[in-house]
Image 1: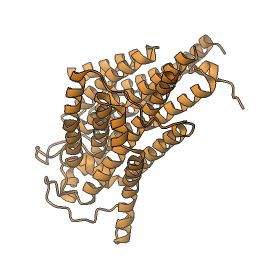
Image 2: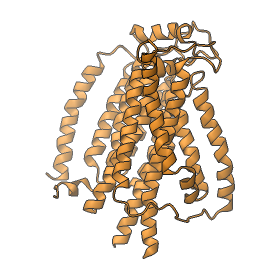
Image 3: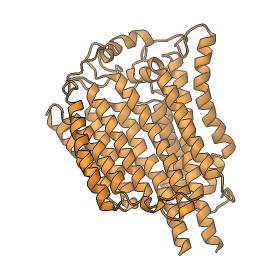
Image 4: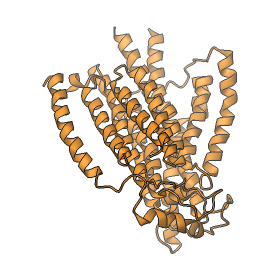
Length: 82
Length: 247
Length: 114
């Protein structure tokens, strides 16, 4: 197996562990965006450009946006209750 | 049970599960030695059968069109679920909230980027069956282009650019259009979602028959669905902000 | 070594499940569910890969060139877009749970209130 494939596989595995071990949700949204980019690199190395295009837009724009909106609403409600 | 017992129980179970999964995965053919004939046959046969250069788009919209119709209906149902959950107990729709972006640099660069992103999205959808791209990818990019209008401008502009009376029917039209194409081919005498239109020449935009139509319908549905999702979630935040301001 | 991508898929599944078990926040839980889903994408694409195969787009390569499997790519790309919408539905449910119970901690949401 060539070096690029090994490197991307290792990168995806390590970043997934970081995503899971981040307990603060705001930080986790950003780290999830980075994890999505490592997945994109893996998909390109596996010769799948359509899948890589889907994953770029979804993991860097769509998903962090809904997470951040949910987090903003929850935080505002909690701040107001105090 | 306490958190610790839960984690310990999970680690024990995960060890056994990992052994089982490893045993299952070891039965696959080694990485790089794809055995099955189906992928090789489709790659060889597709350009002469459907006259489309992006084989993945032909598989998504033609050979496995029924699966894609199922996925589009899943998308439609989950967006409907989000709308039902979030629109139900809202006191007001937060349509006239004023929160303009203060920074001039952000406004200038952001709003100048909106037409570029929308054109890129339309290119991705239009050339989806010739080069990498397609309705799904381009639809999400189009929704993000519309979102830039809010991020670099004002909330009111986004609400007036994508009002509820426009976005909801657009999304429904995308999903229903897919099913309508299938029923249309049934009525015309072929199978459900069979490619009955003239197929055109390989490599031109006018190729693929029903693949081109279904591609655009999928792009419309995905774009409208994501715009609806973004607007629903952001309206929740704006409602909370208005409550803060009222106090 | 030739089974490494499949091992990566198994690793992602287990890491995602670990995240679900140790999670203290419903939003963190939804993100870990997404990681479990990405394990399936990696597995599918790894099964379809042929060595010295190229992307299945014939726009600028001769049609006799060996390509990777396009069917698994078709399954994966629709799945990625749809999984975000399902995750958004889960987040809307989490918002409603926070509405009723005032907390997003799964450990404190255990009892059903009538």
